[in-house]
Length: 227
View 1 (cartoon, rainbow, N blue to C red):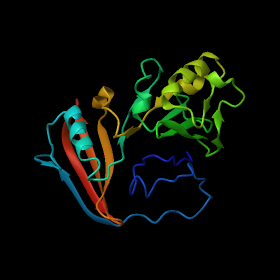
View 2 (view 1 turned 135 degrees about the horizontal axis):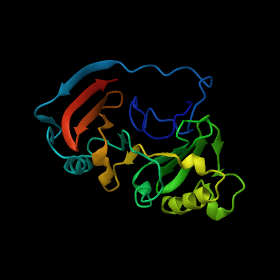
View 3 (view 1 turned 30 degrees about the horizontal axis):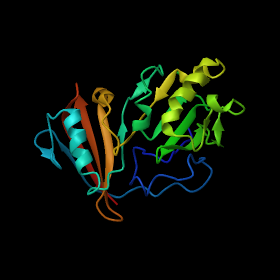
View 4 (view 1 turned 45 degrees about the vertical axis):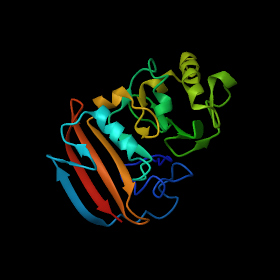
C-alpha cells in the first residue's frame, strides 16, 4: 500500500522531521529515505522510564505523557489495533485523533485516508497516493468531506456518505491509529496492546518509546535512541 500521511508512522524519526507534508508518496517518486542510525536499544520489564512505571494503567500513563508533552516534544502517538467495523459511537472519538482511514475489510487501492490538523480536515488521499480536495467527488456538501471542514463536522458527513450505499463498503474497516496528544484521553486506548511515540532529544537525535500493554496495564517499555 503506497501511503505516507502527515501523521505518525512506525519509523517516524520525529513528528516534524519524518512525516511528509505532501501526503502519500509514490514508490517511484523519489529516493528511499536514509535509514536511522541506532545508537541504543533497551527493554524494561520492571521499574520505569520518564516517570512511566511498569504495572501502571493506560489512563494514568496518558496523563503523565500529556504533562511532559511540551518538554519532550511529543506531538502524537500511534495506537495499535484501534480498528472499528461501525461508525456508531465514534462521533466524539474522531476529533481526538489526527486521521481516519476508511476501507473495505480486505484493503483496496481506493481506501480513503483523511488527515486532520488544527481541528480541520487537512488532507484527503486514497491508498494509491492520489490527493483529493473532497470525497466523494460530486456529492452534495453535507455528504462529502472537504479539505477545510471542521473535524467536528466529519462524523455526520461520514454517516450520510455511508447511508447513500455507494460507498458503504468503505466503512467495513475504520482505522483510527494516530492520537493527538494535545487532546483528551480516549478510553478505547486501554484496549490497545501497544502505543508508540517519538521524543526529540536534539535536532538530529530522537528516542522512540514503545509501550506494551496487557489488559490495560503496562508490561514492558521498549526504547530506541537513534539519529
